[in-house]
Amino acid sequence: MLTRGMPEMVGSMTIGELATAGSVGVETIRFYQRKHLLRTPVRGGGIRHYDETDLRRLRFIRQAQTAGFTLEVIRELLDLDAGEDRSRARKLATTRIKALDDKIADLQRARDALRRLARECAEGSTGPCPILASFDV
Amino acid sequence: MLTRGMPEMVGSMTIGELATAGSVGVETIRFYQRKHLLRTPVRGGGIRHYDETDLRRLRFIRQAQTAGFTLEVIRELLDLDAGEDRSRARKLATTRIKALDDKIADLQRARDALRRLARECAEGSTGPCPILASFDV
DNA sequence: CTTGACCCCGTACTATGGTACGGAACCTAT
DNA sequence: ATAGGTTCCGTACCATAGTACGGGGTCAAG
Image (tube, rainbow over all chains, first blue to last red; front, top):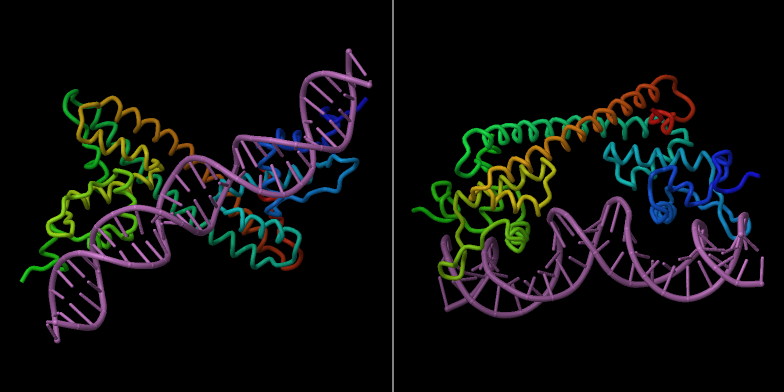
């Protein structure tokens, strides 16, 4: 028989199963619901049921966070997904692409500084590493 | 005459001048002092004076933050700069280099997803953008 | 028909990195 | 000497993104 915990029931998950599938905690799901990033399904006898769509949204949220969007903006993106406002979505995307390019460049510079530090710190075996100096660019 | 506000006096700044030179707010300096990231100089008549070393430390803090170090770890790095523990410094650096490489890869993936979104959102002029879909990788 | 695992709900608390506020003291130019 | 701009100090507050807690309800298996 098909019950809550079984893979065949992917179309009907409990909050715990959704959380596991999305690699987040149950409390995080509830938090996203409070923030209206995920819907709060009507209860079928005390317990709520979630489906593939909820999981897709959840995964999207995590991806979008990686991209540096705040939960606030992610909510807007989710709303936009259903709407007609193509230019708004494009604008959010291009703004973020620019921010990501800048951020990537920053991180690459930081990484290069750290590589220099690690190298200078490895040469010679006495005295302090020139930690502050290695960041003076 | 040489006074506080003048460039010639870089070796003796007030907190406000230090803040300006480091592109941070005065409150941020005080915050860093409370966290022991910056020293709290002894007062010469009610007002504290800062020098080039303080500015170097402040700039280092901001660089290190860009590199993703927490203030906690930055404090350790600052302590290490004066000490003899080369291996600890090297370890912190290499750990962070790895984290940065991972982060850079994440951001590049996110950027590529957004580029795809912007492109797909630009083609055709009606209907919603496939926002969620563009992140399904 | 009880037990154990899971769910619901509201509220409170956490970490990180600041930012703001209010009153007193100080410093410099007029 | 007085007005203004800073500084000092402690305390309080903020945003973001969760995480924890406690008390009660539900559900499926044994």
